[in-house]
Length: 321
Ligand code: PBG
Ligand code: ZN
Image (cartoon, rainbow, N blue to C red):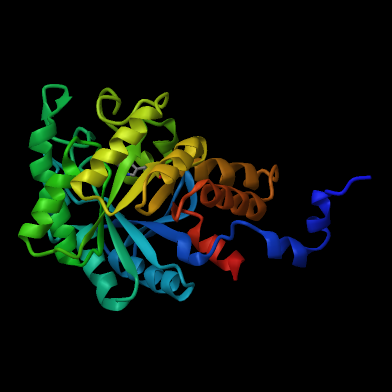
């Protein structure tokens, strides 16, 4: 006789719901937005179906919809009007990102705004910092990242999210924010960011591909996990409020390990390549999109993510309702 039968607790949806360990809610999600210059722009990004380049007023309209779905936050990325060797449009208060942040904050004050702090969308060479020859100069780049973070925070960002992977940037940004009396602006650090092939659609969308070489001198080697814990410890010591791991799906082992070792909130970035794969397979009728998206998001949360940055956020919010 079998005394223990795990199937007993699977006999009806009501029982399954009672014993379910992980539930995705809309409050777990952050939606990434791509803002561009101009007016009335709403152009679909080819490698990211149903994601758009939006001019500021259209970004505001979408932000209203996002808030009305109960999604708590957006992360703002921008395509600037000009690029140079140091990425100075990244801290220009008249650039699309800064204007979008302040317009969204004004129109939808309850929506949490995350600013992506990096230089690759703004430099003419596409690297995430200031070059010295072919090397990205770490400490010179920190000074520029400080300006970007302060400009976004002064525009109204609640959280700044450095994605450049320079050493010491969390401390540098924290210091600059505090000097400007922006003590309550949080830092969500892309603490564990791998040199991943999964960013390809984003680099088309953000026009941010490196013009030579790759990002392996600053982003992490995909083969390393102990190093992930080292990066996390450093960023927490430097003052990071939220720790992010990126990409998500292929790195859930890292998410689980980080979750067990720290007490800060953990975020994952479900990146463009992960999104594009799901959309492509769904468009071909090879998978059930809703089922796969919810399965992926649930797995990220089960692994330990408190926050999921995802291009599926709007669809997922509609399905969760
Ligand atoms: C830039 C940045 C990248 C992403 C977010 N910020 C890509 C990169 O390192 O080139 C990736 C987002 C995605 O793929 O969805 N620092
Ligand atoms: Zn970058």
